[in-house]
Amino acid sequence: MLFGCKSKPINQIVDKKREGTWIDNYKQDSTVYKSFEYYKHDQPIKKWKSYINGKIYKTEKYKNGICLVKYYYENGKVQSKGKTKIEVNSVETHWFYFGDWKFYSDKGKLVEVKKYDNGELVSERMVENQENRIKRIE
Image (cartoon, rainbow, N blue to C red):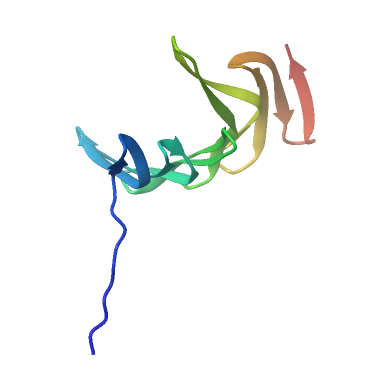
């Protein structure tokens, strides 16, 4: 009995646009970088994962033009998370943070919240972990 296994092509260009699964794998000095990305008609979709030396470094989840980003410590705990957006016009491409970005200690405790408006930092709040209070810094 013979069973066939068909795999999907990777790093595919259709009508001059990225399509489907893209895998980027390279080494710089002694550091190995690998990422898994997904595109539909050259637009980022789904959840992307990026690794450094085999450990998760960043995830990006794309939906309706907004990207939910998480950065990770080497121990796998979330370092920071928030939203980004890309705006493209005839002159430039602008990628920026917006809304609340949360920053955590390497133990997983929330330590700071920064608020962005079109990439500009508008406020910072330090979290006092012992009492779980938020201290506003502006």
